[in-house]
Image (cartoon, rainbow, N blue to C red):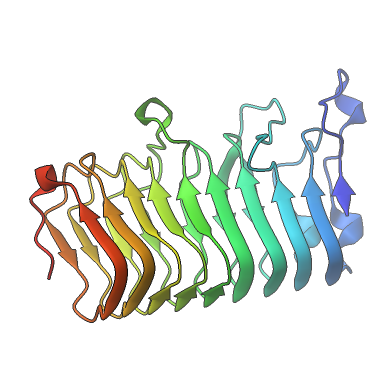
Length: 239
C-alpha cells in the first residue's frame, strides 16, 4: 500500500488528503508507505488495520517532508503486529500512537517535533529500538518530555535514546532483556535512569558525558552485561 509520491506536486489538487476509502482494510501483508505528497493531517482511514508487513513514513536515510507547517498525527489504533520495520523519520510528525501494538521487528522514530510516542501494549521488539532526533545537539528534539513503554519486556537488538533535550521522565518498568547495546546520548534533563526488571544486556551499557543531569542509574536486578561504560564526568552511582 503506497500512498502518494516521493515528490510533492506543484499543485494542491494533486495530493491525497483523505484515506476514508480504505476504512475496511484490516491487513497489509506488504508495506504501508506514506510518501511526501500525502496531504492529509492524519491516517484515519487506516484505523482498522491490525497487521502490516512494514510501515514507512520516510526511511532511515530520507525524511518524510510534505512541505506543510502543521504536523501530521500518526495514529493506528487497531494495529497489533508489524512483522518487519516501523520507521517514522520526519520533522513533520507531531504525535505517534499505536495503542494496540504488541510486537514489531524493529522500531525507528526520528524527528525534532514529535511530542508523544505512545506504545502502551508493546511487549517485544525483535530487532533495534531507536527514538532520537539525529546525532547532534543542534538537531535535538525539545518537544518530548516523557517516554514510557509500560509493557515492553524484550529488545532483540540495540536500544537507543538520544538527542531529546527536554526529556525528563523515563519509564520502562518491566523490561528484562536487551540483546544488543543500551545507548543513551544527549538527554541532559534525565536525572534518574531506572530499569527495575532488567536482567541482561548482551552488549555495552553506554552512558556518555553529555548526560549532564544524570544523578542515578538504577538496575538492581542486572545479572549480565557485555560491558558497562559510564563517563566519569557523570558521577552517577549505579544502584
